[in-house]
Length: 301
Image 1 (tube, rainbow, N blue to C red):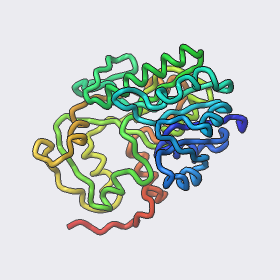
Image 2: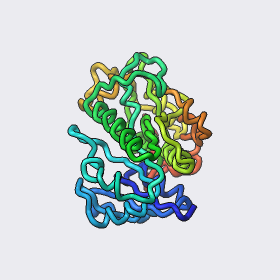
Image 3: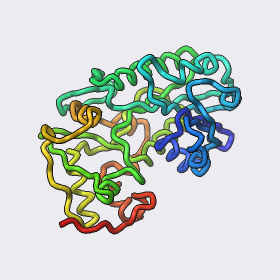
């Protein structure tokens, strides 16, 4: 598979995990807005390139040899940044291109009152950012049809993994147990985003896929489970209605649904971490839950 050339627009947390775990899949190049992040990309095995919405000659040259394209940049209110900058190049100047993957969000489904949703469920996004995501999904799928290339839309649930999880939050004192009766969320470990991308890209599968775990659960349960592994008292419960939250944080609780992952399982993907229990057990036992975070937090009184 070393003949593959993978280009990532927006080589952030999830995309770096993809490159770290799949270096045998081919060579990786990826963009960031900040040159300060170039070293982090190199450490993940990604050739770093700057992208601020303008298609440079350097990016265009990399795209010309790209076989697999991954987009992990959130759209703006007036459209997808990558399509605005590079649609002509994507359509006409990428002779090696075989597959496109677009990282989206389960937020496009909006609120379903705690009911189960799958890829055929109605999308009724609540927030402006999810409205923009749904429009971007459709634009990428349209491009795929226009150029006769498979486009896989990966709808991700709440992302966690090394450095971003309740174990870290308990250690730094930022963990909360917000209680909103009936509220559940799905989650996805970064390694399973990497695995799903490898699976879909390797088979060059197109379509819409929910990339999410098997266990939608109340958010306070995750904090409680993490605290039990660490041997500390969890933070006190806080009523959602009276909690001090940013407008964005509060908006997440306006969407309540259980998300099915049956479609990507049917395509042949087996999750490494099908639920947060198995993921947290692994992270705590292996010690890879934090980046430079002490493993033994102070006991809470």
